[in-house]
Image 1 (cartoon, helix red, strand yellow):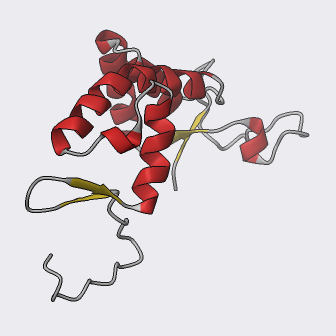
Image 2: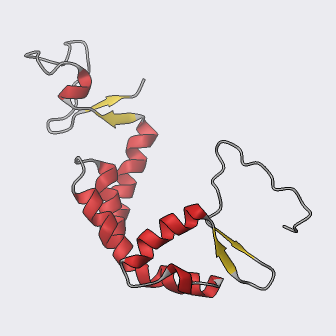
Amino acid sequence: MHSNETKPILGEDELEPLYHLDESGRLTWTEEGKRIYRQRFTRFGLRLEAITTLDDLQTARRISAGGLNDHLVEIASHGPPSLERNLLVAFAQQNDAEYQRLYALLEARNRLGWRVISQRDSGCASQKNPIKEDTPRPRPGNRVSPVG
C-alpha cells in the first residue's frame, strides 16, 4: 500500500495482519504480531527484533514448530476426553495411522449426524433410567444420539 492510499477498515470477521512487508522485503511487525510471535519465539531463544525478512520468519517458524506441537499435545492431553481431542493429539504427535483412524470415525459420525452425549448434557443425571422406552437404544458402551 502506498502512503497516499487510504487504509481500508477491517470488517468484524477480518483479522489484523501480524506483519507487513515493504517493497524491499523488509518485515515490520504490527502490535498484534509482536504479541503473538514474541510469545512463541522467546521460548526458543529467538529475538523478534532479529527477524526482519520473510525468510527469517519462515526459519523461526520451522525452529519453533516442534515445540508448538509439544505445546498442543500438552493442552489437548489435559482436556475432556473427546474424539476431537484425540484427533488433535494424534496430529500433534504426527501419528498418521491413529490420525487417519480417528478422522474416519469423525467423518462417519458427522455424516450420520450423531453426537456424543453425557448424562450431564442429557439433563437426566439424577434419573434412574435416562433413556425413554420409545427411544432407540445405542449399542453398549456407546452413548450417542442423532442431532436434531
